[in-house]
Length: 371
Image (cartoon, rainbow, N blue to C red):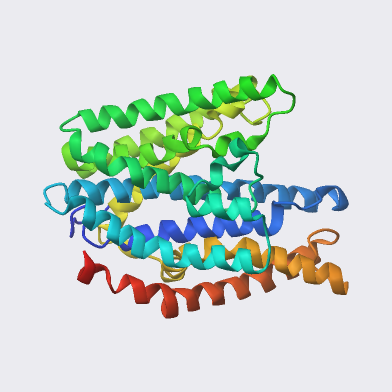
């Protein structure tokens, strides 16, 4: 790893922006090339290429692990503050609410989805709308709802659980979430086909955030040396591969099986924790340039706005393409998909950049003044 120049945990860790950039690009490729694409219209080789972008949906799970790590770290570092809750919630509100409320206003203005979904989304219940008989009208909002529920509960948990109790709580959530997914699978299968939207429910998605929390707690409470952390990260990678290999005969490759529904994401989350640890090791060494990549950090910086709007731009392009019969409507030739992907990504990236610089940053600059 080279000579140690910095501690693993620093006030600014640019390598985490690189991870954030990887996550948002994965989501872009998933929604742009795989999601809602009619694979039957493509030749076999092209179908294999496009199918590979299925893995891009895991970008959301990488976001969860990273968010659990960062938020838990921030809470642990500020646990001594008298204004602990005020400090946290004001800073989170300034980061999240402006762009989020602007998006909901756009969805309402264009009548993109139902008023019921928008009203429930105002209360950050986007992932739970099926329980109210309301369809999830804008799919990307489900993960934001999961994170908001984490923000509501986790500060109190972090404040009051001392010592190893917080670590045990995180491990308990990691254990229980797959069991909740398994129970959801059996309950849903009694009524026919299983909707994968049950995975969007908070109790079925909380283990990713808790995986990140475990790493944050472990690094602060146990202070492993670099060699030990590297060994643990390599073990985590091997463990994730082992879970996959063992799980293949039991259906882990498909969420249409009980094992797949419960455990498919588990090895990926173990891998993401290990990846995060390795990035911290390299990012604090003389080889930091390997993981502090300018282009990926740029995408990490605009990732929130880009995540919010990219699907809206894709679907807007499809609507225009269908109405005016232009290429790139999401099926047919591979060249059409690539044209659509390139055009929409350029548009979405530009809008996300403008949103960050001209809109979101105005609120972010208020953080220190108000908290």
